[in-house]
Image (tube, rainbow, N blue to C red; front, side, top):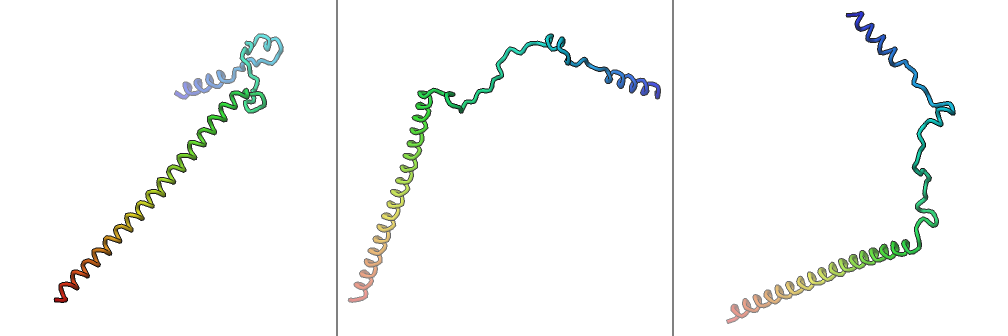
Length: 115
């Protein structure tokens, strides 16, 4: 059994120690496959990256979205103010009704105690 493990370790060491040929000399470099794709970096934010008409369309869409969002915010604010105003008016009407009921109850009480 010890011989088997020794042989296994020896075989793995010898198989891992094989040197793969490195591509260092010019003959092997010529034999390497040619790269056919373009690797030039393109700066998409540089001048001339997009045409003026495309930028004008992009800006128009951005401005429209901004105006729409501002209009939505203004509409929401106006609705909030209208709701608060309606609540105040309802509270005022309720207070007036309560005051009128109290006065009526007081007048009824006074008239029943005066005979």
